[in-house]
Image (cartoon, rainbow, N blue to C red; front, side, top):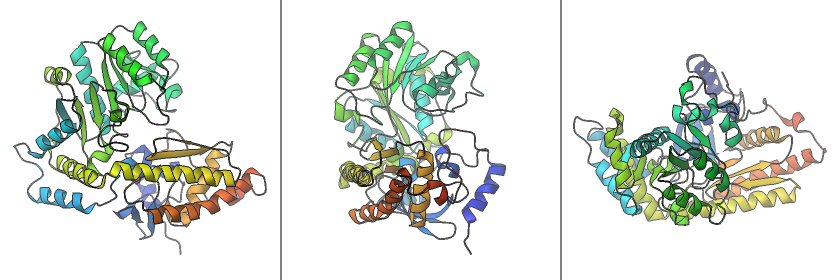
Length: 438
């Protein structure tokens, strides 16, 4: 008898946890409704065991990008366990936060000071508060995804639901104070004219917050023009590197493009699965954190900074950013090869170490569901996105493509009407976007 312990637990969770889970990106409906394993019992390297002790190779999110050094990394876990044994919290501060701050400043010689938090949303909110305090202005221009807090979601209080057109569809602004309307203005990546228009129409702009790179490379001169525009108008330039940090360089990907922000955030990979985020910046701006109230008890716990220090040491030893970039390049090349062999119209985007593909077809969501379904049957947790890790060895990647080739061959048949994807799905079609799933 096939067990579905994870799905049964998820059904219970939806009754007592709004949305079923605390991270939208982990909702089973986004992958394989009613079949997705949903919960894990243990994880190691790039393997996950579900509640029924089925073992899978994770060729997808690696916990939404946090574990670039693999799950349960021994070197990092040993440092964390030792820290816990010595006490995770006390009335006094942990010295590890000073050491981690020094290491981040050493990696970014333009930065002078650091503030720590535990989540990307918190780090984004901290940077916005600091920028507003430093400038005495309120309005923000944004390009990219920057979390769930009121300041960001307020962009959807405008009549055109700005974030729908910008990046993410279906983000409700319910509960966000209506008084925040017209304080945040999205602009599209590589569209410098749109940003210039925002700056011209809003002389009280405090900050430009953006992801340095995500789906596409910057056009020649784009980032430089953003930097100059901010400098000329005394606007704080904030780079959100919660996702991109430590994937193509040892530090922020802005180092690759040689464009320096005023503030920058790091998260996800910084602690390799342990909760730690950082806001680094220039002293004259960071000091404004003392002119406002930014404080939280659990920003002073010991595990996060300890994990951050150990993770940086492992990254430097392995040159992890080079490994995961090379792996991502191989994955992208083989996706394209499989698509071409099967006459599939594919679009591949993203940083090499954070690669994604979409099949250009009206049946895309059905195909995505089919890929997840068939690869799960073959022992893979996967979708159309891969966050590469140092544990994705050549052998594992080859096995992944041996399995995926059979799936792409079937999709090629679907596209030629030799067979129908509808006849091959054992699940409801996966959902997309940020729809309410209760």
